[in-house]
Image 1 (spheres, rainbow, N blue to C red):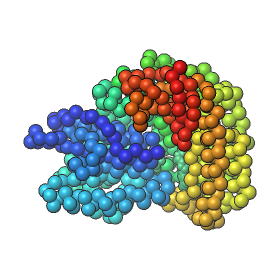
Image 2 (image 1 turned 90 degrees about the vertical axis):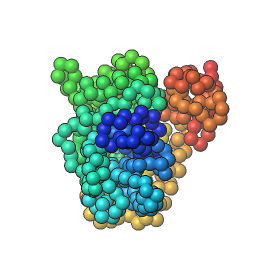
Image 3 (image 1 turned 60 degrees about the vertical axis):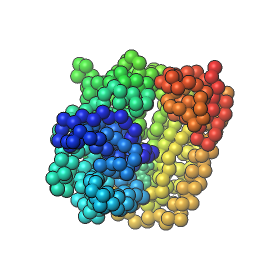
Image 4 (image 1 turned 90 degrees about the horizontal axis):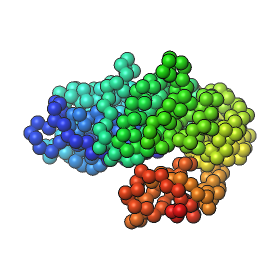
Length: 470
Ligand code: SAH
Ligand code: SF4
Ligand code: F3S
């Protein structure tokens, strides 16, 4: 998922050094977000941190005094995009300088973490490079950069960044909409052999219950109806309950479900190994917890799963799905798949298709294996040729698409609750969200945004559903 920029309405506060000194227009920051939902969340928090220094968000790069690229390193293409964007930004910076206007450029996120100093070498226009664990220090880094230093800060900070980041004011939260992300866990200790995340996000850290509850309450107070808890391994979250007892994600969900006004909870992304009984029980018991689960398996061949270091078999995954469906029969399943992992044979690939047939996914994301420097997968022999990967991906996606369409078609005629989120394309239309994360177009008034209404699904289109009010 990508998001181009953030539409926020930060009031300018001039009290800090970076604020405008002449009382004229405040400074503007443009943030381009690549990668996963956690980067979307991080961009929001960076924007809040910068608003204390007088930076207002803008969606127009041309008027920006600061451009931040919040980057993703997951596949080669994702990382390469950043360098081509930086090439274009260099030209813009030169052009603005010729007009006597200054524009600073910062690289944050996972490419920043992975490449650090290398970014300064390859991209001379960059002023600051800040990793995902140090972005609370961004305002300070910008101050130093203003004095002419080029700053790289990619250390794993010992302090808790969340303690140093402001939570947005009510009006700002309201302006962002009725759904929100909330990071509860970050980093990963799983070390799948294809993946850069343990190196870019660091080891697994869980935020404490009180901090999470406080943030969730503030969001709800600002008008948020649905919260999606985020983590690279969100179901590995662990903490302590009121009397010090060990809590897992299931316990946290029961606690958050008690917040008055919070109508819906979701969480992503989960690892099959961390799907414990308490969490499955939460799916059975909590109506607030939406019947949707993103549970990536990556492959359906035990040999490949082992080589990927996923630490479970295809049969174990299928047994888990069965258990989850027994607890919550209407749950929609979503997954991630990689084709062409080194050594993947035709038979291994057929096993993946077979697993997909058995699970029947409502939604899925699939990728060609991309060699990532520094991961164990990069050293494996038997890399799969590009054209084989292409062909496998096409077959896999055709199957997944068929399942997705069948899932959508099966919704037609059903009555469901949707959360009205935002204006639709047509006047008088709103877009709502079904419990299964589908977009639903319905005729409703703008004043109803934030309401949960009961509708009848009447039809489907490529990426959304149509519904009538009941
Ligand atoms: N923590 C999540 C995944 C985060 S990365 C999990 O364990 O499932 C999101 C997805 O990107 C992964 O699920 C995987 O399908 C894909 N991915 C990660 N590294 C990749 C690589 N090197 N090549 C291709 N796809 C990759
Ligand atoms: Fe990457 Fe595996 Fe960790 Fe997911 S569990 S973030 S795929 S290493
Ligand atoms: Fe990309 Fe980092 Fe997220 S590599 S997928 S932005 S954790």
